[in-house]
Each structure stands twice: as C-alpha cells, then as structure tokens.
Image (cartoon, rainbow, N blue to C red; front, side):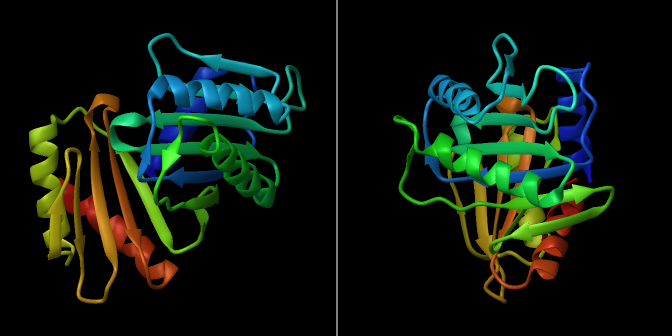
Length: 224
C-alpha cells in the first residue's frame, strides 16, 4: 500500500485544487533507454495530444502532473515519472471508473515510449487498479515501490539480502542500479535502487498473480 499512498500524496499535493478520483491505473515500462529531458518532453506532448489541459512539471523534476480539464469534473488526472538512470517509465492515471484508469495509463505509457529517443530493446509492463485495498494486475508482472533516503551501496546490499531471504537466489546478477534473481519456481525478481529519485522499485515476473503479489510484498518486508 505504500506505493498507492505515495502516488496519492504526489497527485494531491502537486495539484491541490483538484478533487481526487478514487481509482488508479499504473503502467510501468522497464528496460528502456532515454534521457529524462526527452521523456519529460514526450510526456508533455502526449498528454496534450490526449486531451489533458493542465500540465505541470516542477523545476528540476522528472515528474509531470496533469488534469484532463481545467475545472471540474476533471475526468482524468495523470502522473508521469521518468527514471532514466534505471530505464524505468511510470505512468499513473486516476479516474472514476477502474477500467478507464487502467486503459488510460497503459495508452499514455505506450504513446510516450513511441516518442523519438525513447528506446527499448525489450520492455515489460505492470498495470494496477486500486480503490482502498483492491488492486488488479495485468500481464505477468507485479510491482511496487518505496520512498527511501538510503544510499546506493546500502540499498544494493539490502536488495541482495532481500532477494535471498525471499527465495530468489538462482542466477543472481547485478547492474549499476539493480539486483536480479530467480527462485526455484521460475519466478523472476528485480530490486532497483533508484537513489537519485529516493525510491526503491520491486518487481516479480511469472506464474500466478496472487503468488507474484505475495512475493513482491515479501521483497518489501525483507528489504529492511
């Protein structure tokens, strides 16, 4: 639930005059290659093309907020977060209808990834819809994230420890910001240390949704 509280906090504080719709759709693109400036430009242009009227980017931030209309009813709100160092693109859409939130987040993410300079040799997506504690995952990937002030060295050490404690010890591998591993049931997991953005990203791929969700929660609990 920390992820949803974090997103809710970002959306509500970023555009405080708007009433918050109850449903969120979250779409995550991974293994991408882009510059934050390119991603932000792509986000603004595609939000505008998709009918969003009020588009806001905070100074020195790679996060873009938007509302579909300048006055209520707003129909949609959106958040686009560009994490160039980790090759991750996160798109959040808020709406009164869960299906609409999910579809809007997915469409926006796909359009942004098609922009020139947003390169991908392989990408995965994770889509969630939530109201209160209810959420649905599309595809074979479940994901979550935490806000953290932890340094990269400590984060990477904790990531490896979390993976091993959660049963992910096969084919353990690393890159600059992430630790990867498989478990004995062929589920794949990655923990990304997005220290420049003060975030930790958890992802599990494969198998059943209920098992993936539990494994993601295990990674979060075992991290600290």
